[in-house]
Length: 438
Image 1: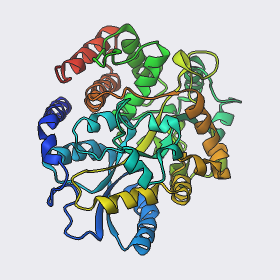
Image 2: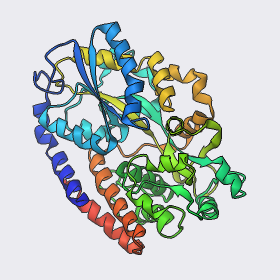
Image 3: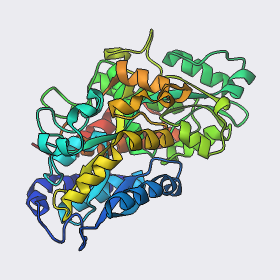
């Protein structure tokens, strides 16, 4: 079923260029699908521990916006498992929201459809100017040299979270800094129903994020300099094998994690079933799951050796959420006002505090809340050792194809089937065949 779904997504995306004209401006039945200029529809991505948590965070702010402007915002929080397909369908049908959140790694892919409002100098001026935003966040808003397809909303980075009590019980005094240390630490803990590291083998986006970073550490990328897929290079194969081997060979990840797709690894961590988890901005989620701040610690994600930095010492992708507007919205003025509101200094502080993320708006980062245990490592990572995923039009297909390949390899590991360099390369070759032909 997954390979069929991946092919379907590829087919939808390949048709986007043909459908882009249907997403042009001025359609009364298009992206906004509203009869009143006093109403907007908004698809928010699931940032909290649940959809309900997001509604509790966002609805008071939407009510505030309505009070200030008279514009009512109809909210739908869309789970990550559905979000990309929902957006792709909206770009081809012309039936979608006025405003939406997108994973920043999808910016170039969605930009290529022509469905999103370009953020040129004039549009940026309406929300206070482009220079309000940090450069690293703007670097994941679309293809370099083109007007951005979206505006940064939340900035994130991956880090290693660890359970202090589980570490103490195992006689471990500090978090691992390298992968060898992580495996050694994980093996000391992985017994008696407890596991060293959590993973989410069926979470396609998370799979991509992890193997992208590992590929950087192996001196590889999944695309060539001219944007062509390069999934079977030695470095890419080694990266995927290293990640899956945490379950298959190192035995520090529970076999059941092969089926995890949405926050289950965080739940296990919060319940003391797993000692470590590699995640982006997880502190707020831990709190909603009942974990106290003094029960966990956070450290930079592992590198092969030495300290995090650029090149082979990269230890995170530039994670984050961007806010986009469908350009066929029948309320572009209201949609722009809503983006201005959500990216205002005050809202940036409030929303990023709620989600444990980092504001991509420079002025908001001065708040002391963004230099705490939960956020200091993330800020440092974004500034010194994170790399943006390739801003290429085929990035979303890459996430589906390679993310599914990693999922299938985790399933092999969970079921006792050997994961070899050859089997990894075979899966990645199959994924590359699913990419659109040029």
